[in-house]
Amino acid sequence: MLKAVENSSRNQVMMAATIAYERSGCKQFFKKHRDDESTIKTCIEHALTVQLQTGMSKVKRAVSARVNGQCVYECRINLKRTGSARVAFIVNGTDTFGNGNNNSDDETIPDVTVLFISSTLQKTSSRICWNTV
Figure 1 (cartoon, rainbow, N blue to C red):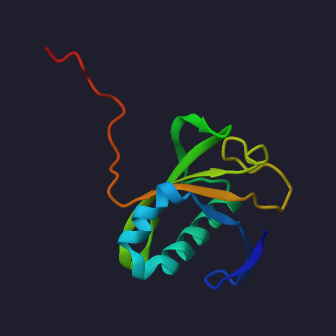
Figure 2 (figure 1 turned 120 degrees about the vertical axis):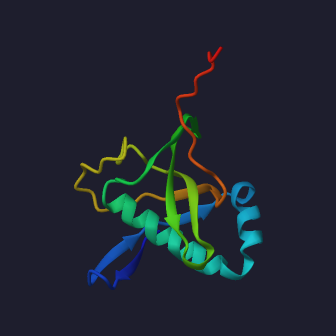
């Protein structure tokens, strides 16, 4: 289900994707930031909608494994008072978006399931030298 969201900075109306939150991965974060839960959800919805409409330019694959046959993506989102957080999510219906490029003329925005939210994850180097003798 899509709903219209007005983007005041550009004076245009965007269609917002339906966001679902996986209870096991998001419960601890929302419990920690109980007072800001509605603000956090609004920021995540806006950021993911913008990323889906612009071809997911600031999104990368989180892991090589798939969840329910879908790629798991992650991006960093600024959550205002809460600070920045990393959000891992899947896009239901990624056949339209494939590897993150929106080459389709289809205006529909697929549903998104947020799997995990964390404000403590740090990027680590993918190249670790194990043979340092």
